[in-house]
Amino acid sequence: MDVAPGGVYRDVMRPIALISLLALAACATPRQQCEADAAAPYRAALQERARLSSDLARGFTYNTRFERRERFGLCRGRYGAAYHCWQTDTQPVTRRVPVDSAALQARLSALDSALPGLRHAAAQDTSQCRALYPAAPEN
Image 1 (cartoon, rainbow, N blue to C red):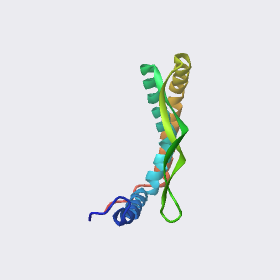
Image 2 (image 1 turned 45 degrees about the horizontal axis):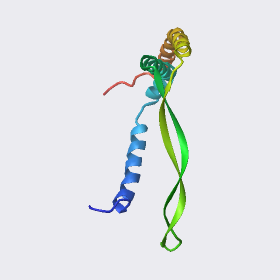
Image 3 (image 1 turned 180 degrees about the horizontal axis):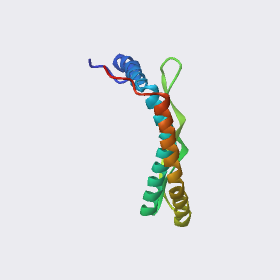
Image 4 (image 1 turned 30 degrees about the vertical axis):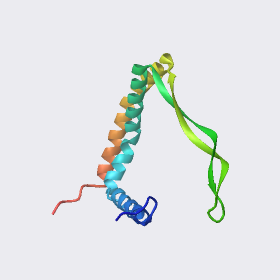
């Protein structure tokens, strides 16, 4: 089916793709959802530690700001007539920013001291999930 961009094919496929994704998201059992929620703070801390370590190793981080820019372009009128007009666009601008090594090192050491407690809490909460939702016997 060869249709122009924004045509019927794309309009039909978008809801089908969304329904498929929602069906896959609903496939987790209550036990799996409970275990994922229990381990979420520990996983977030590990990801933050990895990000801080890479920022320290690189010596900079990325900062993204959204800037508004005016540009002269074509607009469409009420009945489809084209005319020239000023349009405002918002565009992301990403720049490299040097890091404060001492502050990042302090955050990294604080995170390193908190990780064992988060690991222990995740293990306890996961065991509670296993007790609350025992594994179903397989047929």
